[in-house]
Image (cartoon, rainbow, N blue to C red):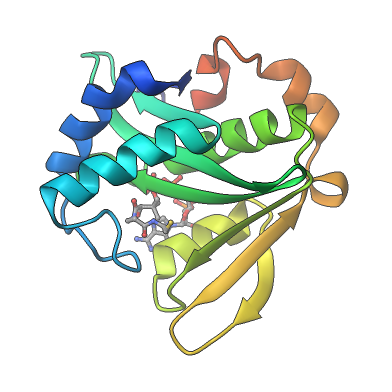
Length: 177
Ligand SMILES: CC(C)(COP(=O)(O)OP(=O)(O)OC[C@H]1O[C@@H](n2cnc3c(N)ncnc32)[C@H](O)[C@@H]1OP(=O)(O)O)[C@@H](O)C(=O)NCCC(=O)NCCS
């Protein structure tokens, strides 16, 4: 099934699109405090995401953003990934496509290790990351860190040539279910 969702890289000009999505996000604060509950903190968090590293968004045909994945670069070859899909558009493959696109951008810019931290009881997130090739790296009572080594686990050649920086719509085909 094709949902019409398109995955595209975004930059600071997309601030209002993201504000609209996150202002309707429910529940806020459920993913280790994210997205921030307070309006001003949420705006600040989005602004930081848009300036710290690669950002990709899922657009529906009407033009709204319904998903957002971003990398916060920690060193020249490592970055942290965060992923959010609006509650009305889940289980359609948007997060999977967003992560693939973000990892392709990461690989193209020389990043080799990408990790993501979530709560161990956030089953959708843990399953999603596992499905995208991430593996547990560290575990504490309230957090699990999952990582992917792009040199070993990611078909870089395939994704770097398939997904260009300007148009990632090719990545939006949901997996066959
Ligand atoms: C986690 C999240 C991003 C998944 O988004 P999504 O677009 O629904 O994910 P996809 O449709 O790409 O699903 C991919 C896989 O993730 C797993 N998954 C997604 N939702 C799930 C759920 N509710 N229960 C169990 N597994 C789930 C499944 O393995 C799924 O594959 P399948 O549908 O073939 O079984 C979304 O639920 C979300 O935004 N949650 C709140 C924010 C959050 O917790 N972010 C992660 C921390 S940074």
